[in-house]
Figure 1 (spheres, helix red, strand yellow):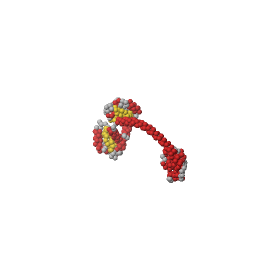
Figure 2 (cartoon, helix red, strand yellow; figure 1 turned 90 degrees about the vertical axis):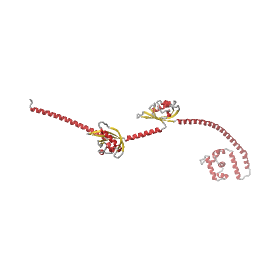
Figure 3 (tube, one colour; figure 1 turned 60 degrees about the vertical axis):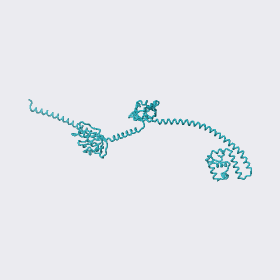
Length: 445
């Protein structure tokens, strides 16, 4: 039997070993707790960062409807500081007309937190601290905070989206109004032009409102189909605008003309997704052009006929003018012969008579003028449009008379003779003052 002292010692050693083991377990638990607390702190810091720097405003609302937390985006969006948010009723950021709806939604999510998920799609208007309103999308959901269920409200500003939707709606309205007001046929084509989808049709295309997969064979005139096919293939290859005038076949068998223009719609890779086009009925214009062309052809034939008649008339007039020139020449020759034979001899006889100095001077002028008539001078100077007075001055200048002598013979002032001289020089083209007038006159006759 083991002594009592030995038993007490052995029990003490066992208790000590158990104590040391427990201490080791507690140290391990402490290390794990510290590690857990560090991870928890890190997780909390991470979620705090997500909370504060989230792109949307986040409000945490308790079951009494008061805001207990707000992030930085909420400050920027609503104009309240985080400190101002705490304790405010959540209704403060909701316009009066939306408050009942907002309360009902919050109560709904708070009533069964364990069976409801985060809710989205609650679109209404929010109100800033300054009273301005703006559209938002609010997501509501329950959140367990210690022993309390609170509501998490994520508020997304949808002002830009609403503006975009409104702009899109207005654009669609304008497009719809444009389609309604347009007198053209509007259509869409598949990328390879194999199938047509009409947006707004007119009977002139085919005589029917029903699109057709065989539109090329049904709508296009057989004589124009090859050319239309070539233009389509080139437009597809170049990804360029299709623009062509061609004939169409109507259901009643009549033929019309259309001007078709289509634009390719591309995707982000530059591939053709669809063709959008418009076709105008130009049958009336083509008919007018055809009528005009016929009128031009008829008028051309008429003008050619008249031109031929005018040519014949012109030939006859040339013959008559030539005959007139010949007659004029014969008349002039007879006049010259008569002057020489019937007038000048008597002038010679008068010179032999008893005449004073003035009479002899006048007789000399008459003889000179008669001689001038029989020379080519008057015919040559006729082209310069000289006045009768200027012609008299020219004749006396050719005789070597001075301006003073000419003035005495014609009975006018010397200054008037100088004016006549300047006019004669201008008409004869003597712009150079040094050019001699007498020499120029002698060259003409």
